[in-house]
Length: 140
Image (cartoon, rainbow, N blue to C red):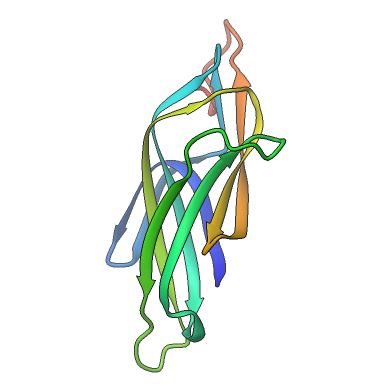
């Protein structure tokens, strides 16, 4: 299996295998902790090869710099089917998250596991917002 994409964003859709992503970000800013984001979406696109067809379980873990999990683990079970003479198939997974709470500031990690094996990760920076400045891309 190959992770082709792992991103956190404002929203995403999958329409007949076509992945649409809106507002990819890597950070959130807020005046105090815990930092709550009303809505966000985690998107992954994984490529599976013929010998990897079958049932799988994906897990997402939000971890701090020390590797400590900060939110409940999110899991999804799915089946991969590869038809005919195709060598591989891409599987899009969209996880909509409501009211996520990050307990501390810092550079954190969003880690992707497949069948309990680590596959990939991306950073999630949670910063303290500064008063009297123009709102930027990290502002919640």
